[in-house]
Image (tube, rainbow over all chains, first blue to last red; front, side, top):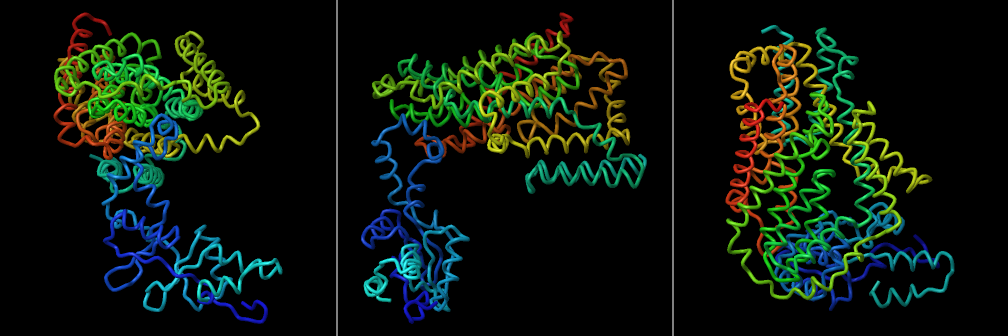
Length: 168
Length: 432
């Protein structure tokens, strides 16, 4: 995909991924997401190969008890103290209980159209970028795709600057 | 045994094996079994599509569908949660009164509405109330599951097996009120007395803080007051028509479908009803229709008649004993496996006995109480039990299999003793 004469691939735009081990606890995953300013952490096994992803939403769902998750009326009558209590109770839960193993992946050398199509089909906010050995090397989010689309339409965007920031 | 009989029994047995072992989704295997019965029956000449269509009890399907539509609309209004909070506040947080109030609310709602919906909507608010006031939700949740099954057995529309039995036996809404409701109420009372005893310790716990419960405003649970008023008017009309459906020569299914049609016309006339239809359990209806077709195949090879002939001797010589055997066998089976396939298979057998000149009314009631109360015997015996167990998993006091056997099994036995007494009384006092 060429923008301003430059052929961009996924590797040019991907950002660094927050990577955590499969046996991490929920509190550790949450801390890593906050430090990495991301809403998804990529989970790897002992060899560094991709197992899946854990998003902020996955963490929220793991904290909320099933009986209240689908019942906003019951939640309306509950209180913040209950949320605190449930969060504390779930802190040491292993992330292996809620890893999303269906996250879509893309190769760093894939073109941006492929990445764009994957993000649409899977309705994912992000695509994990993996190398030939299925090891995560980065993350492509809708923010990067948005920058590319803006560049096509000559909408003022900071693609070059963005690439600099994300070391693309 | 003729070849056609062997073939139909094999199709029935294989299908029921997979339904009862839950290795394949029950609706999927039932549909496959029904289609096999029709195809094989057509080739062998004992069954065909026309006979299969005749075998389906459309009164059962129509009544279930109509009530499912009404419940799907009603659950959006928040009325279940409103009632839960309303009755809970009246108890001022007293654990025994809470068990009584929420248990009986669930039982009475289950008499006119689907048990599963009632349980799904009542349990979250029950757990929230328990947490707010600092008591264990376990006795409350167990009571809700068990009492919903007992309450559901009290009316024609309370439980799918009742709808099927009522349709086959020609029992209307009022007949159930006359014969089944008093037994269900006696069962509820007996179980509540038992619970007061077995949960003595838990119910003696003083709630830590009832102020949050007393601050709850039940009206905040109502999502759409206008819709709720309209639906309650329609629902009231449906219940009123159930009382007089026989006099008006209207089948209960027609009454329920009328209610669903009027509710849709009043509330969302311009909208595609798809959104409501997907909330009804169409796979359950497919399952029921398929079961009717499979059992229809057995009827046409006269296998069920043979079983009926076998039972006729005992039934003629000792009707009460036959009724008590049906009651306890159906209860034990319902505690272990789904009570619907058992009910569908039993209906033509009892109907055959009626054709043979035996007064089978007592047997119908024995079946109603057996399948209605028996599901409480284990946590997997009823949908309400399965849901409550799963919802309790993330509480501090989850309901375990052991808990259920400790409290639920005695409750089942108590209700079955009440039912046995009722069936005996019906026999000796010629009440049926």
